[in-house]
Amino acid sequence: MGGRLDTRLGARASTSSGAARRRRGSGAALLGPAFVAAIAYVDPGNVAANLTAGAQYGYLLLWVLVAANLMAMLVQFLSAKLGLVTGRSLPEVLGDRMRPWPRRLFWLQAELVAAATDVAEVIGGALALYLLFGVPLPLGGVIVGVVSMVLLSLQSRRGQRTFEFVVMGLLAIITFGFLAGLFFSELDPAAMFAGLTPRFEGTQTVLLAASMLGATVMPHAVYLHSALARDRHGHRNDAPRLRLLLRATRWDVALSLVVAGGVNVAMLLLAAASLPGVPGTDSIEGAHAAITSALGPTIGVIFAVGLLASGLASTSVGCYAGATIMSGLLRVRIPMLLRRGITLVPALVLLAVGVDPTWALVLSQVLLSFGLPFALIPLARLTERADVMGEFRNGPALRCATWLVVGLIVALNILLIALILTGRA
Image 1 (cartoon, helix red, strand yellow):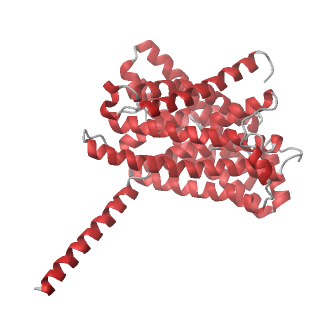
Image 2: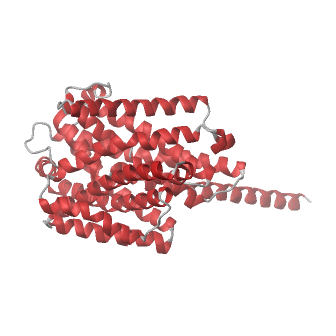
Image 3: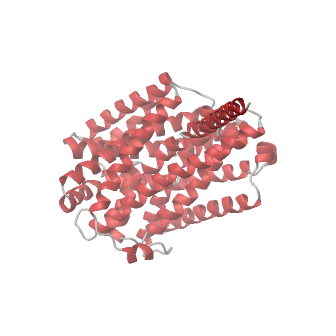
């Protein structure tokens, strides 16, 4: 009798342990969409903005990155939440609620934002190929476009999970590429702590802060994440299942943006510690040369590899976002590879005419910052509505936090517009 009881207890324990392992495994399997969206937070535009800020102003704007990353966690969670609860992407929900002409105008500004993103990503990848192999920038842009087509074909042929794994692998390369130099830099802890105090020093720092914000909280990632979460997990009117998915999504967003935020902070710290006062560090090429001179050729190569991975991954994700925006707002779908070819043209033109690539990257991020309110205000309004979200609408505390974030971002944009119109930026 005792032996049979022991056997039954052992079987139950084994079953319980196996169930626990399955639950843990299923929880880990729910992660992934936020890591794809997070690629937008470590694209070449971030490299340009963060290196420029660190090289020119040291640790002064560190607080911008920390604040922007916290904002990004809230925004990306709300985007994923909208997609999971409604079964619709943010562009689809907006497209269903807008009249034809307002919907087309809204699509136009969103498409311009996506185009600015694509320009930054292709230029960044082309710069990396130039730094690594001396490839001319226009040819490098073509190579980046072709490789991004290969990555996008994985999503269409092998499914979203395969695409997620590839993008997460590229994110690991990006992280290593931009963190490696930090271990060989002499940081100033007191200056780092002072850099967490919000302040500006002149209009140029406001311009850079807006660029860093636009590069960190990116509108195309806001539009995209709702589609990624929906496509990955599907849509079911099952409250317990939705609660599980939302819990997993919180972890997905937090983990992915801790990684992306850490990379952004590392870039600024690297520039602040190793590049201040060095001539030519207002460009990625100059920063790469200075890093190579200060920290050695190995670190220089690792940095360039990280930049290349950033360009390849982010341009694929950016094209995916553009397709999501078009299908949701215009209800038009074109083949992803055809879209990739069309959206490649502006970046190749800029590279061919010799526009300074680093400042093209920085200014593209400012344009992204202008596009943020158009994505964030509708997201905030939709996720607080009971007729859209039901019992999963934002509670009072979350509503307050959301509108605080939106208000801060809009205020910075208004300030930046005023500075540009008065000729002080």
